Image (cartoon, rainbow, N blue to C red; front, side, top):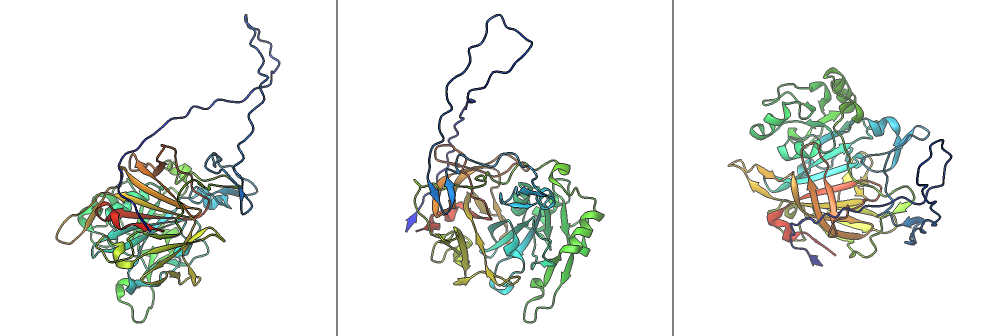
Length: 393
């Protein structure tokens, strides 16, 4: 078992790379001093080896420009090939409760990115970022917003979906053109979209856990509110993560192993994860991290499958208690310590985010950007005060 202390320094190094030799081309232009031909052979690519049919070395071989091939493109959120229309349309960010009275959630396994953070009561709440949701008729249950989730949704140019809000902190953001939102009409919401939500019968559940986002209603609301529906049209999206290219695996073979990951440790504490005792267990057969909490597998009611992702991130942030309601605040911009888990390894480094519509970018200790493997990602916001409890083995 290893415990990692907080670090707070970003070391950034800029590398300049040159091009290989060029072949001469005919031209009507003449120079006074003819340039010598380059005859040097290009250097051979470093052999990083192979794993499970993939070439290792994805740390250096990454997806750059996306191109459409046979109606498909590589997703900006997962790096995987999907229908081009799905890849290019703006995603939805849906607030989802994560405490036992709300379980099980419906449709959450289809999220490309899951963001988890503590809320009042020292539990965690989830925000699922969905791009590939056409097979779903509803998602949820849906719960109320906190401002740090809104700011994180901005990093992915999401259309933000919520049922309720911490009015003093969320209303000044959500009612502006800084983010497009699909919200139930409640106090603090200037422009509701009630056609996107519905209550479902859940005998034995409190009413607060019966409200869901209806996918067809969501689409109707987006059209009525005249929101831009593609990244290009809206013009705010930069990137989610940098992914290893097709056929490559970011192996990070020199980094420590981490096959059991505990964002809040294995005991009880007040950092949020000390309540649900979350754990991600790595399976080398499919290179996925399987999620458990509250002492059992976390399963999606939609398909009865345990939640699993390719990458897990600990984003360590400054946090504080705001008021007598126990509302929390967390750092969403600037920089801090980060741990990225992929391919059974842990890469220690830093995160950096420069503004509302800027992405979270993760760097290793040498200042190189950390490359994610293709697939889904789970980001745990770790309260800095409780970062000492985050462990892995």
